Length: 245
Image (cartoon, rainbow, N blue to C red; front, top):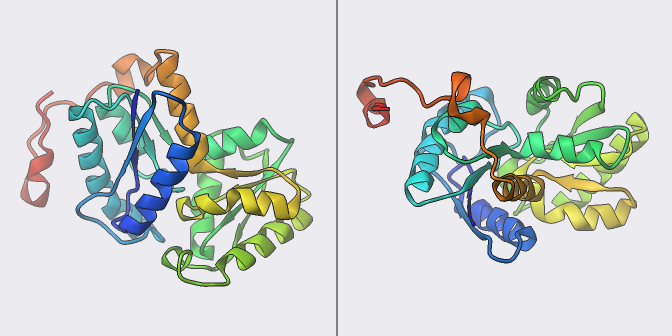
């Protein structure tokens, strides 16, 4: 089995960390390859960033399809481009926010999300609503550590752990969901520090896609809404995205 993990930003150091976390949970016989697009933002911290990350993300999904990927993970907590990726992929595509929230509900009655910047909390609430998790999500909290500082700020782990502890206390929740792919490597240590389940979406999504491929399942039977996009000529900077299916 070949699983592609797409980090929609262009920061390869983060991509390498994401790949290591995904490989750590992949089963025997599963090959995991993480990639970043050639174009796009170095981090995704706004609606603008997210919108401009999608073309590069979809280009990587197409490359993965040509390389024979059996399934794909979108490794950004905003789950950017998820529906579009499901249209063009043969196998299953899972976003890390969707996978993390569903996993959290298997571990407790409620969960709290701890993410990076306060300006991104609205997106997390939107996704909780979309995924039917609004009643399970007790709160979304920002630690105010920028994405690119997760690996450079020596206090990042301490700040995130404290934010998780505060979220549990304030919300009365049972589980913490880490709201950024760049936090993937902190999951085990924060869980040990706080004594509660802490869910990382990268590993949750990797295992979800692996399970779906094993069961022989893909998105929507490739018909209706998730059928391949209709043939259409794109122009300008998007001319390479012209569809012929």
